[in-house]
Image (tube, rainbow, N blue to C red; front, side):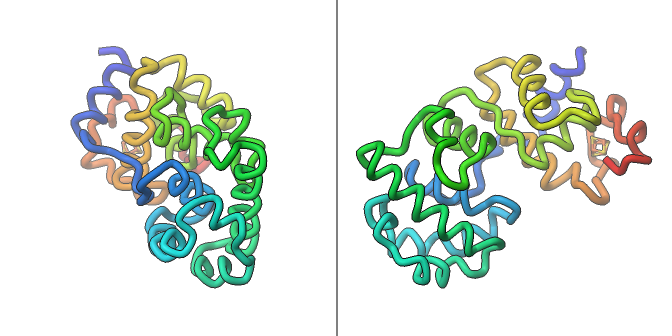
Length: 212
Ligand code: SF4
């Protein structure tokens, strides 16, 4: 079986129900949760968003929030000061420029404070059901170990390679399966290779001196 097919089938068997682990009930909540999740875990974000969304249920409410109040609620999340500023500013922009509706193009999403390409892709894919491949640290590491990308590839290159190699209709679910695989099995440190179905095609040994 070709490498890509083996990976698609193997991950489907391992993680049939992989999904976005950021708790959200609409695209607004997803956008805010994704923005808060930079350099921190989804579990940590989920600990603060319940209170945050109870107090600020939409962009109109968050646009009018005081920085201090938002900081207080999200204080346990890394980089909370900048993130508080960003989520208030992006809400203000959405109210002002998009009539309160979350934009649904990558270009527009990336004009929002704190929203980079990866976050925009998550919102497109999970929030709007559009084909997009978000490459975070798990996806990047796993793509390299599985030989779908090269060691030196940057995130843009990895995204382009994954989009080329994987069927478009699978991008969203494969993104979640890569993340589950990287989070729970092919971890950065001490991957559980004894449980892995991809040992025969794994490139990690090749990159061992570079600590991939
Ligand atoms: S064999 Fe180990 S390092 Fe390689 S893909 Fe599987 S879990 Fe990851």
